[in-house]
Image (tube, rainbow, N blue to C red):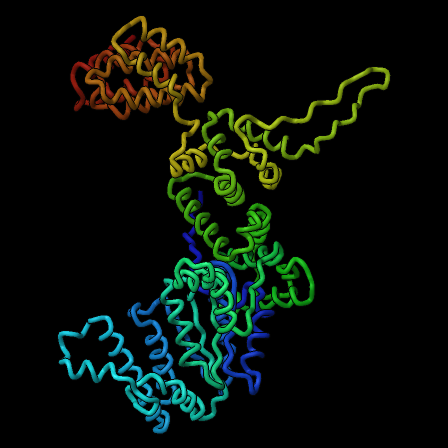
Length: 588
């Protein structure tokens, strides 16, 4: 199997639009730039992995092209101080404003005033928690907790007014847009602190907040922060509606969008340049806007395009994944990463399997685990028949086939194919989809996959066979002979698996005469197993006994063992008695 580079798709948001989110980004951009509206909070909602961070990236790239917009990026989930998330949010915004206007004296002065208020607010919080009690005298404590007016620069009461003055004083800035990401990953207290910081201190004219989060999780966090009350759920809904004036839900991926998305992800394996990848995404977007399908069609107009196998894999995965996984970009990436890991393992183990077949079997593992276990537990020689019956059942229409014999001869219509035992009914779509696996050599790959999943493989000996191998290597001659006869009556692949087990178990024997006696006799009954005997002889070359050479010289397959005897006879470094037995073998 030719080596293929290991590829993993990271979980970072995409810098280009692979998901057709331009339809969402444009309305948000227009809302954030609408004159005389502010403060404004826009909620970008979708479930986990739905593409919220990607939308924020696209918004940030577009907003930074406007010189009159100051963009601030915030991620409360990454704050170090979980006890003062509100303070961290405010400090982060002030720091980014300071970095943008570090040469403006007026802005610097106003920032210093706001930082004083914030610092005193944090000191008050620390005192309230008892963190600094040992460092303050009673008079200072009384002074710290004395009520303060808005004019006092040690009070947060006047913060919002001064912050509004700061924003108004920013030169050549019409909007400050704060992009808040990963709020739904925060603990409930941090969610509430972030929303309170926005509403109580930062929501002033010319400020726009774009909050990317799973709306349901944010509501649950608000409700959890209120404790178990009858009003908590209703309050959480109204509270969020009070904060967010413009909710925007990201669309779920449909099959056409999912196929294009998967195709563009897989296309990375064809090594496009960044410009080629961008051109492909833009081409896909243009066809989407024009209503042309598939979105990754008409690629001959591009200087570079994904390979045909890549596009075929994308179509196959789109057809195979369940609707829930297709609709979630992160779930798609997780499956592709599993595919990449499995392909790399197969390559490392020299297990040949076509990419399309690997993708289909991985879908079986992922979607229909018990049916995969049935396939894996089926003996190797019977797997092809199982897959043939499985696919025939899946593709059958269920309608009787019209008889082709003469009208005068009555005939019953052929019975429809039956679902194999141990296979689930809901695998019909999987089994009917391309490619067909019935004629593909999957033995080694299925055994590899079974070992990784810790499920039983049909390549492994059955419990009955294991008992027979134990009898075969035991001390009782009659039991040993009966076991040898029974084993030799098994199908050849099962005999091979059993002999491999016998040779493995035989390593534990101090005297190898018994092992070679039984496997040589066994190979006389099934000549196709001689190669295993020779492989065992090579493994134990320095431990071979005269008895092993005698058994080989008396075997029906004697000519198969002659080259080994010639080698031992010529090997002056071998044991003298074994060398003598090899010489006598050759003289017969």
